[in-house]
Every structure is written in C-alpha cells, then in structure tokens.
Image 1: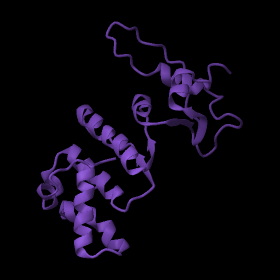
Image 2 (image 1 turned 180 degrees about the horizontal axis):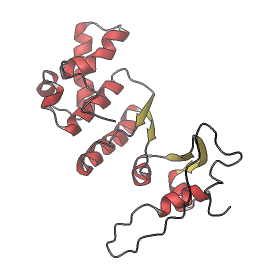
Image 3 (image 1 turned 135 degrees about the vertical axis):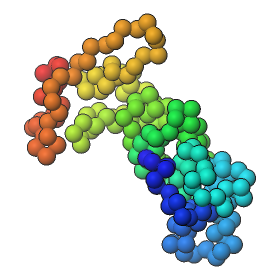
Length: 199
C-alpha cells in the first residue's frame, strides 16, 4: 500500500529485488543479477543499470511502487494479493501502475487478487469482482455484470455513491442509513439487513 515505507531505505534497488531470490536459493550470483535485470525491465524500470545502485529515496513514488511489484514478481508467482496497491499514488501515476499490472497479468500469466474500495479501478483492472460487507461476500460475478446490473442492495448503493464526472450532475441521496454493526457480533442472516433500504 505504501511505497514510501515498504522499501528498506538502507538497501539498494538491486538488493531489494534480489532478496527473495537469495532467501529461496537455487541461483548463483550471475543468475540472480540476470533475474533482477529481467524483472526490472518487466516493470519498465529501464535501463535496469540506472536503478540497481540507487536507494529508495532516490526514486519517485511510481518508481518505488514498480520496485514493489518487481519484488513480488521476482519468484515468478502464479498468484499475487494486491491490497490497495495504488492508494498512496497521485492519480496520473496510479493509472500507469495499474496499466502495468494489467499488462503483466497477460504477459506473465499471473493472477492478481486486487483489493480496493474504488469500483472504477476495479472495473478497469479486474475480470471478476466480489463485493464484501462485514467480511462476507454480498455479490460476485463478471465485473461488467456486477457494476451495470447489480442485484444486492449494498452493491446498488455503492454504485450510486460513485461520483459522476459531470459538474452539473446533482448530488445523489445516500441510501445506506444507520451504523455499521460490530464485526465481532454481526447480524444474523444477510449482514447488511440492518441498514438495507429494501428491508
């Protein structure tokens, strides 16, 4: 989530990306160097030699986030959990990193579990979406189907709350009322029923 705090400030970019390879073993120093260079190229930090000797404070936020993605990819995983991976970035950089993740998904055949509060970003990056409330899935399915034909009242309320990029549009009335119940002692049945406008 935070590219400014997640990288060790005392380690070079090379050492940060190489660390998982050294821990897992199986590669000699030449193999590690080649793998680090290939991974940095995959995340568009090119030429790699310009970045390997730098420290994290010498990089921009977007570059740091790419280093984080590179570190996650270096062991060639099939599945990556990305919890709000662009929440700390400026909007312009956010699009670049998300597009990079979409490209890598296809190029490296890796699956991402992308956790976000932003439905617009989920629509842009995901194939399927699951809407959760108090730790339970309220609705899931192909992203276009869930966003354009939501069935659950909670999903409908979330989509109504997405701001419209039209300065003349009127502000929508919030349909969700009441307090969020305690996750320790959730309501029985559908966890949303205590706040549901249809209940």
